[in-house]
Image (cartoon, rainbow, N blue to C red; front, side, top):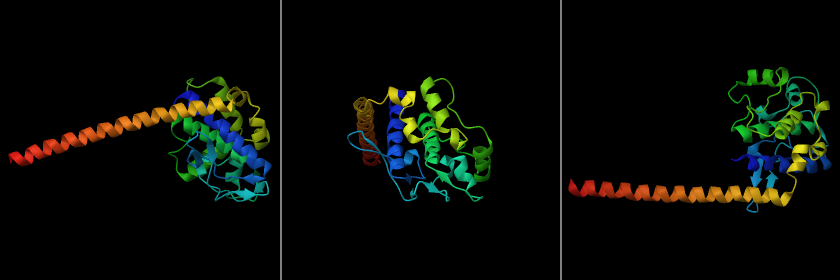
Length: 209
């Protein structure tokens, strides 16, 4: 997925989290798999099976790889976390979408817990991405939730304001979808030709036997 298309998804994620925050809802399982892309190229957050109302939670849910440090701590100690845990998950999701996998994806659970709670926050690799995108992820992945921006503050982040023209965002995503459809049609056509060719070879082999 090209850079400009990757950049579009955090905007919708941030808007969705801001809407949930206003309703005092924690999603608790923010990750790329829980994004739905409509035919009109609108991105929606789905799967509210682990969501919590009231603005705070004591019980972490969802994929551990995306959980915030404070949510993971609540797995073994009494405590609570708020909507900023979803902001952390947004940062992890952004890295996943940019690099193709979530950080620490090969670590066993115990090592994963240690890394997220005690290790440095993950960052994007290399200089492929814009400085503003690096900065956006760095802000989302502040280990201390008090220093992490809220969903509302994310909407004012330089990275988000730069891409916040929603029509342009949808246009970029639609272009990517159309490109994907063309590739899929080409692949389907190629497979059909290959299958036809294979069947012909098989038929010739049978008739000559």
